[in-house]
Length: 240
Ligand SMILES: [Zn+2]
Image (tube, rainbow, N blue to C red; front, side, top):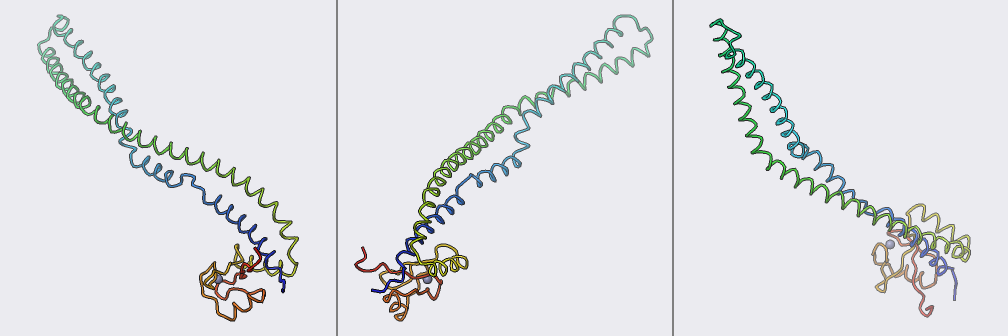
């Protein structure tokens, strides 16, 4: 029987295909990119809702301070008007007008404080709900990243173990065939070999192989698939 060395080339191909597979797997690890994008989007979309409780509480504090200062002012005027230190009726009248106007402003502030008190529970509940949603997203990202990290470690180990199999596999193939194989790999990438299925089609691209190609394969010749260019390989009957 002719020996083109295809079987040994196929062993090298299996190592290369395994390395390629490990690399692709590592490249496709889920680092939670989708959740990260969702998190960014939600962070920006919910900024106002999340900030509202703090904003309302700050407004309330400001109102209390303003109200306190108005009340102090009113108390001072009251003291002047009713303490007897001011005697001019004109002056007293002006002060009473101011006291009344202070009263209106103080009541107005009361109203707004009441509104805030009413709005706070709902604002806090909404903000809390969003914070919970964001925390969940953050946790998912962390979990995915931790998982990807450990998967990456194990892929690295497998890669290191598999890459050791390459030199001995390479040494068994004739340089001429290796050259052909490597040129093809540079052109079409890995895997550069395809197994012929039992229906005589290319195991990589699926095209049905013509009889003349099958005849060459039977003669153990190096033949490329006419469609995907891969070197065709047929597990030799009786080789197992
Ligand atoms: Zn093909």
